[in-house]
Length: 131
Image 1 (cartoon, rainbow, N blue to C red):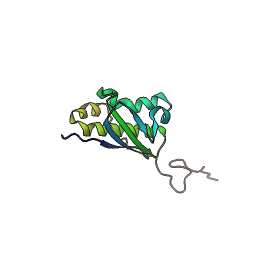
Image 2 (cartoon, rainbow, N blue to C red):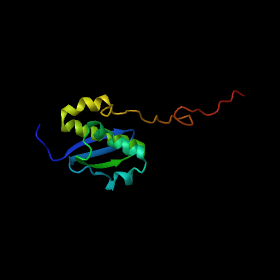
Image 3 (cartoon, one colour):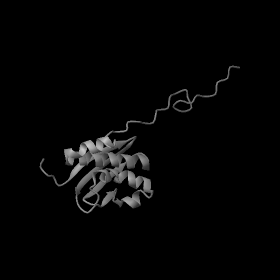
């Protein structure tokens, strides 16, 4: 495959969408013009974002630029992980089995159920009174 300068991947989770741009570099991760540590102060979210690089053993070899919107912080972290995984899959097909085995290429399709009319919430009903 011909080497492109920038490889992109789109990751999604709930209502969060992350556009990921991957390029050769020193391992700098930028999310919405902020560093990874600045954007995600909790270590668990940082580990979630870095997990595809850890599994592929390419930490510090690629710069990652991310535009992310929608959802909460955890959903955004998982959307970024999905986007990074898709970008690495596009970069080299030999990465696919490792990423797939760890479940990074699977789009988590669970969404919030909509609220129904005549009910308090999606499934909760108003109190029933027989008399």
